[in-house]
Amino acid sequence: MADKKRISRTGNMKKHGTLFFLVVFTAVMALLVGVYWQEIERSVDAKDTFALGGTKMKYRETLKVLLWKGYIPDTVHKKIQQELNINIEVTTFDSDAEFKKHLNLHGNDDKNPNDPEIPFDIIMPTDYMVLSLAEKGLIEKINYDKIPNYRNIAMNLRRQDFARSLFDYSVPYIYGSLGIGYNYWEIGNIVFNWKMLFEPQSNTSLKGLIAISPDARISLGIALLAMGKSPNSRDQDEVQQAGEYLKTAIAKYDIRMMNSGMGDMLASQDLLLTMAWSGEIAEALNEDPDVSGINSLAAKIVRFSLPDEGALVYFDALAIPKTSTRQELALEYINCLLDPFMSADVTNYSYFATVNQQAEPYVKTEIVNGPAYFLPTTSGPVFIRQYLGDDEKIYDTVWRDVMRFYFEHLRKQNYYKTERSQHQLWKF
Image (tube, rainbow, N blue to C red; front, top):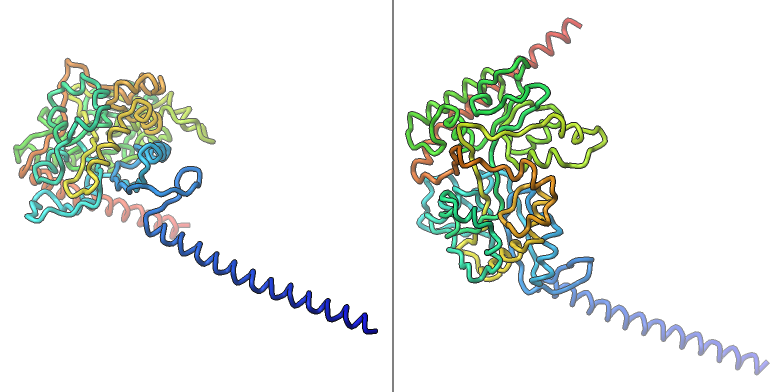
């Protein structure tokens, strides 16, 4: 009996000892876990991020970039993150108007004596916007000594008169042409001038199946070309006539305003005739066929032409705001993007042509030989949108009138459609 009691007491002691150990172990682990999570929170505050492959690493800096939507894929930015040991925060925009909002700019008469604080280290303005920003003292001159890959930019582009002015304050990166995209099956191979966009000679009804850009300088510029004038005209009467010309076409053909997606809509036959960027048409022609086979059909029906009156060539460039505190890092970023393999990755993803001549061997053959790389021949006039200073207000004023007319026309269309639907429902 005594032995059993001794055994019982010994067993109880072991149980109590085990319980005590578990309590102490749990408390220690809880303390360690708490310390661990405090360290994680501190590291997040210190700009630690989760990098490629989910591995945790501490970046030396965060670079904030503002880019055109659909140009640079995440895969390219991940490679740059690894190479430079930086974090990249990307914001995208889809129009010049949206670009201005991101930069806290409001119109062309905003020569603010207090320079706006631009919350980015790299921005991607369109050609004529570069000179506007430079005039306002908002972007830095480019130090090409810090961009050795600059030599990869095609010499024939660097020598173009219309491009030289860009290189002081920006590094041109993407280029292409604005032309006419059209449905070959419905319209035929006859779209050779801008006038045909506004006065189409076709047996097919084109009502509601034509699109132009909602950008003032683009659409008014193209209307001026169709009228035999310069797209950079400073003549108020000429620009007003271009506005009236557009209003007449909008009323007659129910013309639509579109920023992007015109190539895909041509492929799906939701549009038959449109202003179009060369890269967009290239993308529509080369995308893998989807379930409905739209893109395989696109190769048969979609065409792209550079009109006889003159082609509008554009550059989208990389610039550095004066307010950036990471300007050296921004130059490193630009240099990385001008690496031939990086530039090729960008073009193979976006279908827009790269200025990087050394990248062309790595760009898909169908892109290099397609609309993306279409440039006007030397026989025809070539235009780039020029920054017109105070005369930009002429275009803004006329365009506001065009847009008022456009929305009023849309309202009437919707009213008639609603009335017709209600009438048909009443009859039913």
